[in-house]
Image (cartoon, rainbow, N blue to C red; front, top):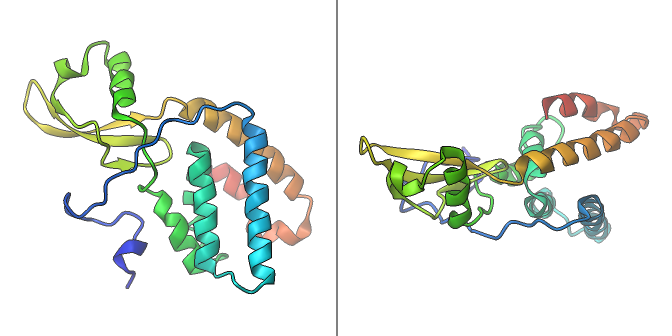
Length: 201
């Protein structure tokens, strides 16, 4: 049986769940250069630790998770898909990537309110009698806020999409398609079925 911290989405009472870390959105330019830099640093770090025989699959998973969380959206979704490949990757590595399912850093509640108001065409307070700015879950595409509907008094979960998600997903997907096309030329990588993974994404 898996330990609670290894479950991708453990069922916990509200008081037991650690709060979602909220960080400002990263909207820096030169995204492709940043992606190459971060993955290059990850590869160097993994190689150095492997050569010094101080690398466990869980540590490798932790390093990879930290990189994809820093890059956000598409890369977190990719980590979610990769975490299911227990047939080709070490279990401890996959368990670490499974933490990308719902434990990502969120974005500020004020920004979530602005997005909702644009989508609804009216103030959040006109729709909800109570809207919690602190998200209760955050993942690759959006985050979830607790709220109570004003007209019916029903408690609801409101999922708010990250404002940068569509643009980032499109650019990052095209970048990864180019990488997979190049990697597809190497027979040694054939068993990873990279093209099938791209179709899944």
